[in-house]
Length: 230
Length: 257
Image 1 (tube, rainbow over the protein chains, first blue to last red):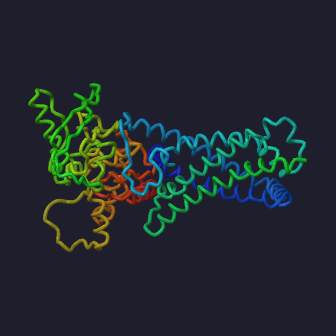
Image 2 (image 1 turned 180 degrees about the vertical axis):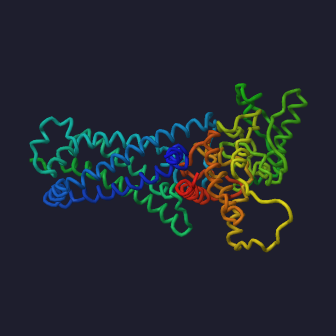
Image 3 (image 1 turned 180 degrees about the horizontal axis):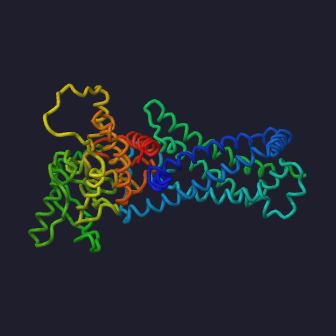
């Protein structure tokens, strides 16, 4: 097992595992977004999806263990790597300027410059989100009284704090994965003149889809608040 | 951006001065008049140093050797960019026509825990030597020169290997990386040798030892921002880092050690 510890202690090994867990979490985002988009189809479709999913007890246990495992490994390695990276510079430059020509945005606001902090914001959003939908914390008995998952989602999404946190969290998540997806391929050693440009642009598109896709739910539900209120 | 001015330049230089590794450093400002646009950046610093010596002050220490862009000795952060604003150019090949009359130029040493400042702009890059010593070589029996055609190497493999071998070890990749990672340097050395039949027998041991040494020296991890590639005067591609990642994981999973 020595080799495994060595791998997880090395910069390259850690980035490899970051890439693997990151790709898995991106795959989860696709499935999650696809499921959530059923909210736009209607209460029947969404409720049917939610009930069918919750009936698959065995699958849910395996999926949740894998997901939580991937999240924890991804977060712990992010902390380890970021601490090492910060220490490696030691003294920061009085003046720093990028030499990359393809830069569309200034270096200081580029997604790759803030991966740790965007990840931290996403983690905060995630804790609130799991507390809302999975554990139904902070809601007292008000959610338990509602049968339909569609109606539950409606109540949560129309909360003004959720509108702010969910919208911000979704956009930051989009920014995070817009670099993360392409970066994962590079960390796993996938770099090819034929495919890398496509992976780069797909990663940016994925970021936009994730950001707009997930942020759309709290925004749209808040806008339709008065119309949909009983 | 080439200055149309044929007349000489007046510059304000903000230069990092530090007597030795343990002493605190600071920026000092110098005014330099009458700088020819045809001078190289290092020649401009030579002129400054002559003036400092005449005034009885300590000249600015900086590394340099061939001044032809091939030795890898020179290198400094010029206005926040490793080797200055030009691409695929070392500091010695940067010319003063790249600047405007009246410009302020901020000059700093490479900043990295693994590259301690020796004095002013000169840093100790022996960490690179130790990475090479860890595995950046090919073990061969010495003796009679082998037959020229004993090892046939496809031309495209030679070319790809030579692209990596173009690394001059200047340290700009470390300087430009936000994590002070030496992954572009290490990957260039690994990629250079692994693509040749002579390098194949030691490929696993090499990559494991070199990464282990890279980490021990205190360089950061690669977060794929690719600033290194943009700053590299030898145009080393980040595709070599991907190859390094593949080689490392293959070696880790299949090595008997």
